[in-house]
Length: 341
Image 1 (cartoon, rainbow, N blue to C red):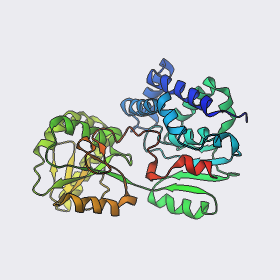
Image 2 (image 1 turned 120 degrees about the horizontal axis):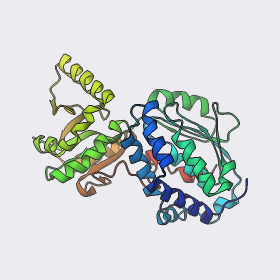
Image 3 (image 1 turned 30 degrees about the vertical axis):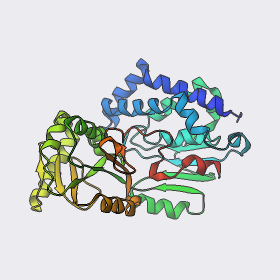
Image 4 (image 1 turned 90 degrees about the vertical axis):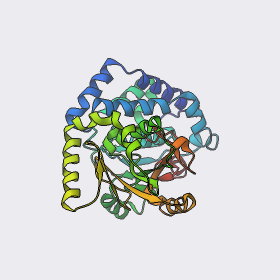
């Protein structure tokens, strides 16, 4: 495989980013067709994913990201074959791992999710049109063999299999995680609208989706429900509506106290993971104690959001689903891992 300098990688990826920000008719057709293979991949969801990727692949962001690593290391290292087992819960969810493998000078052996088989091949085809040298740096496979390292993303159940099967190789194994929001009672309607992005984008199926709220003792949820009212059309999605009805029925049968607004239900629960169309909430009395609690549970949490990102270590409302290149899943620096194989 011909060597690519860091500058060539940055230029090529930034051109791809510009393309995603101004998609062609061909890509728009693919976006509209994705939902026929996976009903959760609505045109809006796929467009959000493309926007997020395009926004991250800006030249200045690529430089900030890649130039933080040891200069010249990309060219000095011997290329390795990195197996990628991609998830399919969100459109293009594994694309960041692919970018990391390509940018680090390695070759990606990509096992696509059966839920997302068209979008990633199209983007990589576009990338090779921009820079033909990338053509030999990835391969789509049905079964992973002859690899030097592995990055696998799946459920808690599949992760146990991955740990067993890939333990002798350098690896990153990702499990289920959830995200939380911390409210302090000063939030405005605009704040809650932004928080709605973190809750409702991708129908709550991603690890960066907020699935739990921490609220002050005695909190009144009226303003919260009023602030997310604009997301009501989500209930028109058939699969989401079915989940809403099913999970509401479970709450009723189990005589669990809840609040709902006809498209989202909330109930008090200590678990971070909540079913589709629902949120868990928990009261807190002391912010310092809450910080300690979240730090203790860091392995279960993908990210925390709060008003203006003022809660320690949190992101601002509305930004959870728009990670930067350096916002690595599970807090594991993928590029450092790849460069040290």
